[in-house]
Amino acid sequence: MKLILVGFMGSGKTTVGNLLAQKLGLPYHDLDDVIVETAGKSIKQIFADDGEPAFRQLEHDALKASLADDGILGTGGGTPIQAANFELLKASDVPVVLLDVMPETIIARLKNDTDRPLAQQLGLHGLVDLKGQRDTLYQQVSDFRIATDDLTPLEVVDAISQEG
Ligand code: S3P
Image (tube, rainbow, N blue to C red):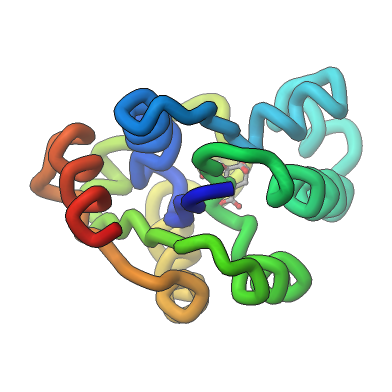
């Protein structure tokens, strides 16, 4: 990979990753899509049928396999939180960019979400708590952070290009 995006659900990893990949003429890989393809079912269905630990194992396998590919990688919001994944990301020499979002932005973006199992399980306040629990790890795993709340996806892409 040339660059890895991390950040909470709703931080714009997929949108920004696709735009950045287009700009650089590189493929975009979304870790959630790799997992869905491998499992042959949606993330929601994996959580429902097999449980979160099974999802986390698939996520770890997908991360390990994807790191060798070329392009931009968008991770899932929980990817860097698993210790083995944190180690893989830290050990790779690929720049890891944190797309950061404020709680208000998460609430606005996820309030009508029906696809993310954790959003259903935890509710909006639970999600904000979860982000608080994860923030330190997001910061530790990343090489730089972009506050995305007041930026359009294209402005985020420009901000990443300037850093890189
Ligand atoms: C998760 C984030 C989701 C997806 C799964 C779990 C998390 O990815 O991997 O629902 O634990 O934060 P997005 O961040 O792309 O929504």
